[in-house]
Length: 402
Ligand code: GLY
Image 1: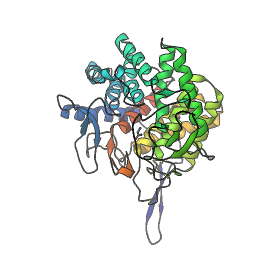
Image 2 (image 1 turned 180 degrees about the vertical axis):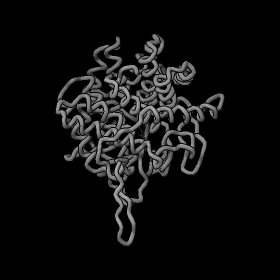
Image 3 (image 1 turned 90 degrees about the vertical axis):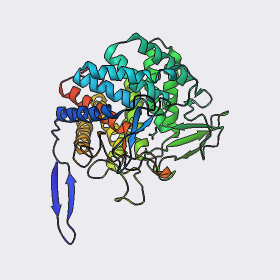
Image 4 (image 1 turned 90 degrees about the horizontal axis):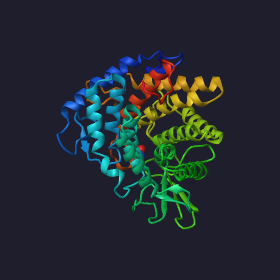
């Protein structure tokens, strides 16, 4: 990282990344172990006991139950800590917190988030332990998620309930829903049936067609006629305006289409993953951590969203292993490393401020909730990205066991 000092009336310090970074990944992972140790020591003994956020200016977590959309991120983080440390203490905690989510597998789908919830927790658990019980829970979860698929539209119904501006009972699909296809792809390969694969591909292709503007920035939500499948409108829910690029939404697109290409090997999705990535990278501020919405009217005073940066860094590490063009691959890899270096700085790590890993994420700005906060999914994707980088540096694929 190179700092450029400009003077003239007001002194400005611009941070410019000019050289390949040399992040000490183990030091950051050990930092995560230290922070999680503090969190683990403060958890309530019974539900709600899953940490979700620490609001700006506060020092302790707000806790949620297994039904909350973010319930998989703490168990998932614990699995990553186990992967890094190999310490059975983390494995036991990861298992125990994952099990809190088990009822989701077979109860009526609350919404599409079952993919986040179960795949981040039990998905990582299965990858690291091979526990057959986890496999059955994941297969049942995929079937539960599949109940939300509307074949007339070709996508999953993200929110099966009335949400303002979504014209309920019409069919809504949100960009975030792309991440949950990973559960369907996994299940299709592991005994769940080819229909789940077809659904996931249909969702990705339909979303590609309807969810993006000509410059490849995404709408947060598309509302469809549930009977004809016709697109009614593209709107926002968590972004600044219908026409703007909500940062985390675009991160979900980058991650989602990278994963969809990995699972399908269809070059259309690889090309698309690069297009949605390039527009995001071109418009980032100097420290590579986006404002919560790329067109927030009060930039540069608008809150940042470190969670979007963590999701994107993790996705770019995988994308860098998938693109054929070597220059493009190293561009994505460099950007991911630079994002992780930025997130690992005193500006973004929580350190002694609070026991989370990261500061400065924004959950739902229009609702004024979780603004400039520490949030569990920022931490989850941050540690995931650090582990992916560690694997790549030792010649392993990003999804391998460390
Ligand atoms: N999936 C909800 C969010 O990204 O805030």
